[in-house]
Amino acid sequence: MVSPFLSRAALSSNTTTIPFSFSSSLSSPLPWTSSRSLTPFPANSRRRILVVQSKIREIFMPALSSTMTEGKIVSWVKSEGDVLSKGESVVVVESDKADMDVETFYDGILAAIVVGEGETAPVGAPIGLLAETEEEVAEAKAKATSKSASAPAAAASPSPPPPSSSPAPAISQPSPPSDGPRKIVATPQAKKLAKQHKVDIGSVTGTGPFGRITPADVEAAAGIAPSKPAVSNVASPVASETALVAAAAPSKAAAAPSNLPPPVPGSTVVPFTTMQAAVSKNMVESLSVPTFRVGYPVSTDALDALYEKVKPKGVTMTALLAKAAAMALAQHPVVNASCKDGKSFTYNSNINIAVAVAINGGLITPVLQDADKLDLYLLSQKWKELVEKARSKQLQPHEYNSGTFTLSNLGMFGVDRFDAILPPGQGAIMAVGASKPTVVTDADGFFSVKSKMLVNVTADHRIVYGADLAGFLQTFAKIVENPESLTL
Image (cartoon, rainbow, N blue to C red; front, side, top):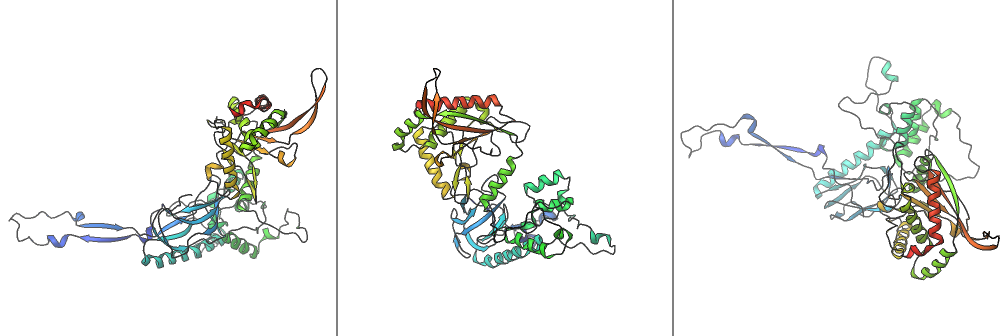
């Protein structure tokens, strides 16, 4: 359960001031006072301002992970008008990794739902309003209506420029308000493009949900062809409305030929789910990291024999491989390190093995934390729990975003070798293929058949070098080929 995001105080527009005057009690001498004259209060002390805070609170879209920029409402557990108690689940939100219940910090009435089921909203945007009393429900509904009406209008078109007798302002960008700095809401990719093309992001008008600046907005401001089609299949109704308005308006950019190939007749366009979009973003981000790959054959006869012994006790092959990798990382900490800014790297104090799991509609990596310290049987039990939570989309953020090293195993599908893409923020990822009978020769030239699996590791070459990775793989092979230490 994740606590919501009702921590912001009431709206300032609802703050009322009630003057309290004490002057009437001092306008004439009191009958029981002495002949001494009373010293009047200073003028600035005669009035006291009593501030009464409104009890209408906003429910915000929570940030359920460090990579989450927007969330999708899966379902509202409560309906408008329901009375809520502190700690009670209100709404289920889909992040880029999991579905999570959002609880309330306060008692109150769910007065209005701003973002409906199936709709998306940026992190921090209001998705509902909570009132304290029945009398405030109508006021909250009015606020929700105004928010819903103003958001699409703000996103669809920029505010008109101020009237002027000069024709010049009519073709210029509308200037931001002068009463204070305007908050810039932009996607990380848009900020990156703005820096790359030297575009002042503060002067760009956003066309995304709630006025969010998208990469296409930055490209348009820079005068280059957009890298994405003007109308996209997105879950957000605000973004959809914006795209339709932009498509309906005649423009030279719309007439420009697209770089994308024409769709195949009879094909169907399917928009990414939230999880698929997150995976896509991470994969593209990984292209900025210089990587290299090293393969190593490992004999598995002893490991297979151990597995047959411990399998009845609930131990999985994934747990055996994760334990072996964690023990090897303990001897080669640089492979467990991470580089995030390109200027320094961090030796992680914990060895957290993230294991790739295919689930319906995407891919997720549950994390076995402190895998080197856990008993093999406890590690297997923990892994089974994580897999069940992953497939029901109930993982907590720390259970999927705290990995320091990733393990991807396709051996159960008969795949003998493959390369894995390095996840952003990690130093290495190990790809494990299937164990297969292989003919080998010994030093005397005698032939024999042994089971071998090929292990390929992809690493960040900024912090891990060839010798580092070779040493790690040799250690990993020794542990697998002599697996008694895995059960200690």
